[in-house]
Image (cartoon, rainbow, N blue to C red; front, side, top):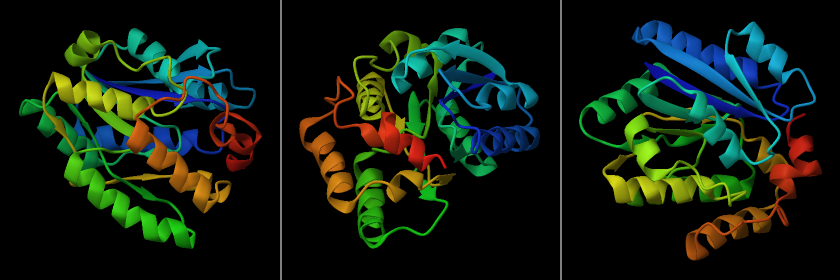
Length: 235
């Protein structure tokens, strides 16, 4: 069985598309699967949408995406885990390529993402650079990651000390455990955060993680992920 784990905080505008894409994808692939939505302190219709889409719901009050993902993994029954953000859409090519890689001995991987909207100028400049570099060094964003249950259990999952960069930390851990792959197919994710983050803040945030490694053990300076601007980006 495959377990799709979707962390969600106030994602009523996006969750339906995400879950619908998983359903369509898996109907075509024809492999047993489950969907777990981790409702992390939502105050909107997120849990109702998850219920309508027949997802299993795990309720937590962490407000930490690493902890939410881990909570979903603890409830998962599958031998393969897909961690998909609520504003991201799966597709048959991406999931199929991931399953093929895992079946060929990879311990995990992640797909490059494309945005669902036109990017600001700085984004149009930085995006191809980031994609090229990411494929070269096998780094991707955390909106679509996958791994075997065995390696997840062996490594302990996502670091709950981190409020950002937990995806990069997890990728590093997977690489130490075995072969990490970045398949050619891409997935689609929301560009909503680019609507509330300026060029210097966005570039500085990414460069800091690349240079220093994941270090955000507090929410200070992460308003666009956890504060008012995060809520604004969901509109």
